[in-house]
Image (cartoon, rainbow, N blue to C red; front, top):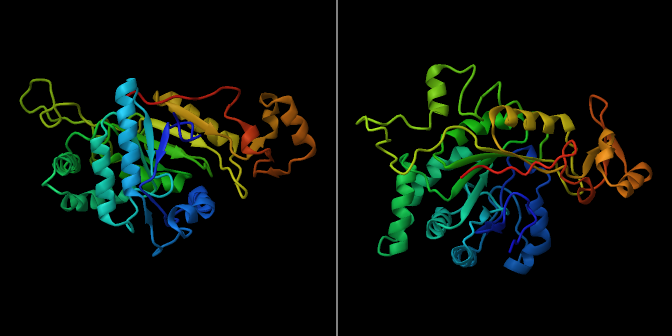
Length: 350
């Protein structure tokens, strides 16, 4: 049974709460808002966002939930997707490294779950995971398992088969900054969360990361950023010598897009969504349209229920974008998930 309304996952699992805002996508952080409502009940005080502020852990509770989900998955023959740390960032450098070690150990203990690890700090992966190795108790079977798998992952071996790694890219600047770091992380699945989408993003012409290729890059840089699917068949038997169970695949394997919700939400131009959809189609990469958010384009009214249109004509304020497109604040419960009259619910092949 799901414990979340997030369309692209089945469950959320939080090992800790609290974060520091790092980019425009964080401005109206939903997690900070949720913490103000529920934080005191869980932790005795309201978690405060910001550098130097304490993070609030629930490590044992999260592991208990994960183990229960894993047991259920075995019993039912399903493979749930689990979004980790929706109330924080798993690569936050202000979090005690022991907490990250505990999180990764839990993942290794639950091989029947697919863990979706989303971050705005992909540049921290190598330094954070490198520090984790000294945290495991090698006197226990769990510690030995986690140490071995994490060490193999770090040195470029086969990544954990139940881990998806993603980064948030809300505009071109963040795409330029974060995608190269994401592409250097060995992963079975890499994905982008373009939510809230705050400007147009060109993935194909600038990077070609969707198909694992590069355009406009030097050969050396292209090899570094995109050649993550190995060429290590030194003995000529047709198999990779380093990754016997399968090489990390190059490129980006999934794109999620969505608008912003909540009181001060900013509108997303419909053309930005369409561009991402079309780029994914051109690269044969799954595209998932999560939501319009609070705002909906007036010229797309034909895809909304009649009662919503009637209310929009008389009640909802509008905002014109730079090209004259009129966006109406209809509310996320009414805008729905159809883009040009179609649902886009694609997921990566695992």
